[in-house]
Image (tube, rainbow over all chains, first blue to last red; front, side, top):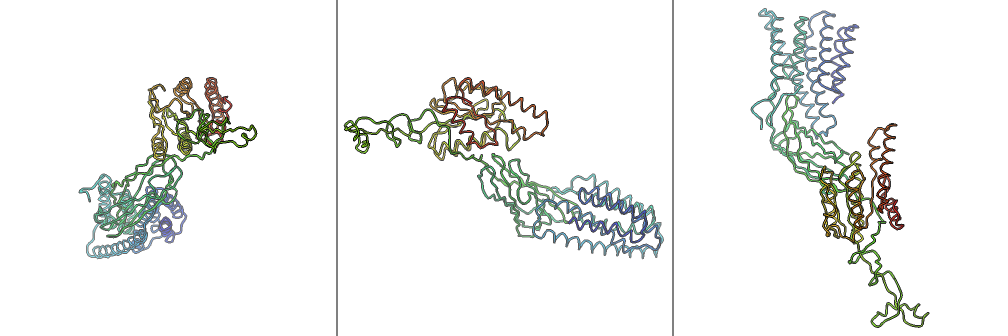
Length: 169
Length: 424
């Protein structure tokens, strides 16, 4: 499972290099890859650090290259981000543990289904946003900033919610 | 079961928020699109159905084992409702060491199915193991939320001390009235020929010594020594211990006591046990298989119990410490209270022998080697020798036992010392 996570990390870090093979992107990518590998082996927060660097690298690469937005590949990259987090976390849980029959297969099937659904959902959302932007002109940057602020609020709420009621048994 | 969000959920939100920030700062739509699958992933929270409908059963390959033996633990997980991902963890006490498999496992079970989980442990030290709690964590497939619970699955395992092999034992000086394996000085029915005397009416013809009768031209009969058993009382010092488990002075003392008890009981002797831990705990001398079990149960629970109480040997009842008994004291001689008890026993005329497992090699094994440790151990050795000499001068037979050496070789030294009447 850690190998799968490493492959996902490599694709996450390598894709911006395909867009713009510059030294800055390479240095950022190398640092991100190092943190990602360390995070896969050691702890999720380190992996998150690596992913933060990888996102910075991904921001830098199209900015340097210019050109129209590559939305389909961005959807793929988003799915890779989620799967990387989940596979690394599962790999750490499964390390030094007995794995029951069918666990790995069921897990891989679950990730495949999620990847397909999330990708399709994101593509639908992109299409909807394109149609909406063609019909009405919204100030997108403040809207996205507001969404970001909302996400941050949700994160704080998630962090503060220690338990969930009602109990499930 | 209380369900909580895992740190992974927070990580997903963090990465998503960072993507949005970068998107706003750079003004590129790709970053916002990258975040979309992350946000869609969070929608899975709370969608996992309740999966509390499962049960655990445990089977252990043996309920009573000796130190060093292995036991296979089989845990069966049965589910009446689908369980997406269940993590089970069974903490092991220090007595048990995992040798095969894992004591943590991840399982996924469909409705009505069951899964078996096996692992093997080695029992490294004597004691009673009463594990019973399996910790369970139910995950959703994404790992974004989990619920924890503990399940009681009773399990009792008794790990008895492993008796060391013994063939030769220190013989007692005094016998008891019951039939046993020792040749008593008294004459009577037995197998070992003793004296020859003139025939008197009433003697059995088969006891006539024909060779002597022909030589002296009158009838002589052979007399035989009686074969008797003995009372052996093992006195165990549980006042203190040194070293690192599973090789503390108490551990090796208990192994020696188990070996001696097994060997003496095999000789049809009556064996008793006195645990000297401030207040006394004892098992009356007796023989037989049931008594062997009783002694091993007592050795199983023998442990160091700190106490300021010092009881006199005189308080031990005669039926527990018979005056004719051979007393084998097993002590690392770390506590002066035990030495005082030994002196008291010797003064009362008991047939006393002391087997002293040395704490020094056991402590050295647990320490990092250094010059100061070497010096300290040498000084300790000298102090120990001084103490042993002081007891020796009082007529007490002491053998020093390095637990790395076989017990039988050390007991041979004890037998020689007792034969010579000179303590070492």
